[in-house]
Length: 402
Image 1 (spheres, rainbow, N blue to C red):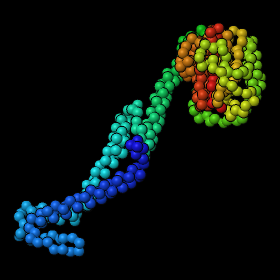
Image 2: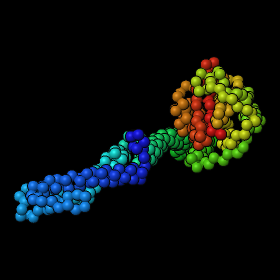
Image 3: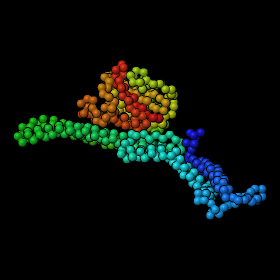
Image 4: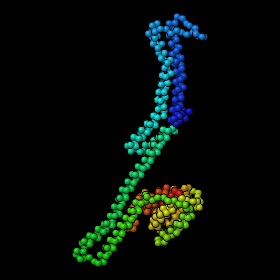
């Protein structure tokens, strides 16, 4: 019963307290007036010399003020006051008690919780949870405040992550630009040293110019990748209807073209559940699905992720890359496996922008492939998981919510 009253709305609680107070005030006032009248009659009886009969009862004559003692006069006047204003006094006291009880039961705790939470948020302490379990309006307000606090915490966390990523990106950009600039600077110093003395060989001069053009082209490619990277967050998801069989047919052709120049095999399979060969626990789950089920997915975005993963896998594979498509509940899983040496770094390191596993890749790659895959998977409501198989070789699992 108490729990039900505690969870009543503020309006209903006010009405309940008001009705209970009015009823209690009426009862208490009635008995107070009766007791005051009875006490007054007792005082008057002391000074009554005779009684007069009126109807069926006797009426005690009210003595004159001069007839009564000072104490009895005050008692009589107090009884007059209570008979006239007693119910009003009781009602005032009852309403005051009701308001005090209403504040203590319904407002004090949630207001204290919200005050502390506001002070914590003002000081940027966003990890303090707001807890108030009542189901009334104040409980709803506290839960809304908690939702706002969680959103602020997540936004603050994302902001700090963006700042950290920005720092890492600036450091990586400085590193990648420094290398071609160092090469060009060395060639310029050689030219300044050899040209005035006319000791520069024509063949060496052509080699230096050609290498300089290679470095310039590399910097142009780097700027192009920078432009692409800046537009990643602006990419909008454009879902369209498709099926696993349509994706398999599409990827069989495109993966065959990618593998043709590498002299390696790339096969695409549709299956129930993920591969059992993977060592990661999340790769070994199973889920029922049909190959003809309609999926709502951004096919172009998923294709770009798959191509990046396959290009990366073909670079390290010895002979073969396997792509497995499966539907796990409301998620599309695309697993890319290779028979190469596998990953040597943690997934968080591998998916950083401008990360290079091999220093030789600096000449042709800018370390954005896995980073782009991770960003696109997250934009599509999924995630990117990297690991190694028990039998050897790396495996990448791209998850998309469809």
